[in-house]
Length: 267
Image (cartoon, rainbow, N blue to C red; front, side, top):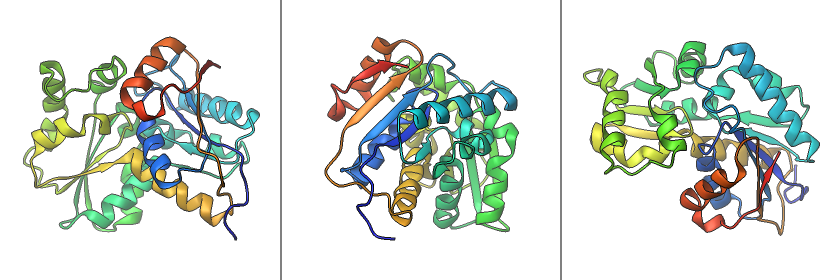
């Protein structure tokens, strides 16, 4: 189908600030797309929630975005992507999630077929990355671990690789991959790429990092193009939050300063 056919906004959601990694990447890829971003901060973190809760939260997020008139949805949350995609599809809009996109990128990048995945605990327990990696790279060996150490730090604005608490949390999260022989590590929660510098320092040059937010944005851009849904002449960013709008606005200013001040509205 042809390009430049639909100037409605796209919808992107995450439990909090992590999905801004996808927003940043999408704005670089498709600067004329208007974006409506929903941060479900009233329910962050998603990583310890049950599969049923995640499906319910994903359905609610997709319903909210659809009610605001978006044309397509990117699930920019690894945990929601692992358990909630069927619920999102029920909104009836073109959609994709970051888990499949990140697995496919890792399969292309890995040289030795040993791929690590660091995700939230709920994502690890879901088996979603194991399934997607098996489909994308048959015969590859996946080393998958979940952690609850990082999201609270990131949501509190602590992403500096020089912060002793950040260094300690990253070291603990990376420890299970020591000696595993992986040459690629998927940062399978979209919050985690905000700590890429700390992970690169911890793991060394021999391990390539896959940014799940950026991978999701690339897959979403391809979906919009294939569906004839690209925009012309936009480029705005609006944010909805279910929790504290002022706190999210402060995080937005730190993490995506080129987009600030963008409107932040209580959903």
